[in-house]
Amino acid sequence: MLLAAKILTALVLLIHVYIVVLETVLFKTRGRKVFGIKADQIDAYAPLMANQGCYNGFLVAALGLGFLYPVPAVAQALTVFGLTCVAVAGVFGSFTVMVRILYIQTVPAALALIALYLAQ
Image (tube, rainbow, N blue to C red; front, side):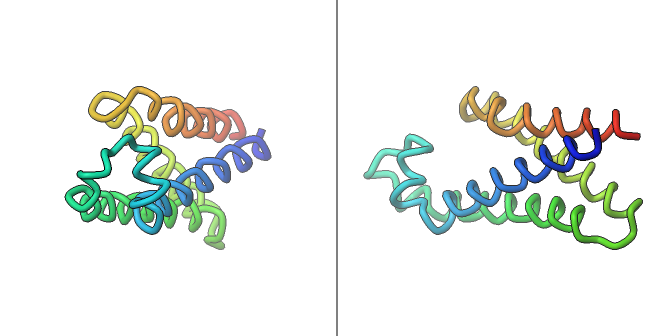
């Protein structure tokens, strides 16, 4: 089960790397389409999305440190923290932005948390 938890956590990490790139580097092209932003609203939304991308970058950092930190208890705490933040942010996003965020963010994070719990 630990392998499944690591694979699911890596998936969540990679999803959020993609989200960071969409919200920052690719927002005015691909990101605009993914998030359904109208062309005339790009300039107004760009700073907000870049800020949101920064926060998603912190989630990536927490999950990445969970893989790399040499003390297992600290690594697991970082992983649980990162996954929990992703799950909560996904629930909030599903209510405030679009329902599919629940499936893109919350479901994989929740499955990883369940797999981590079962691995103990």
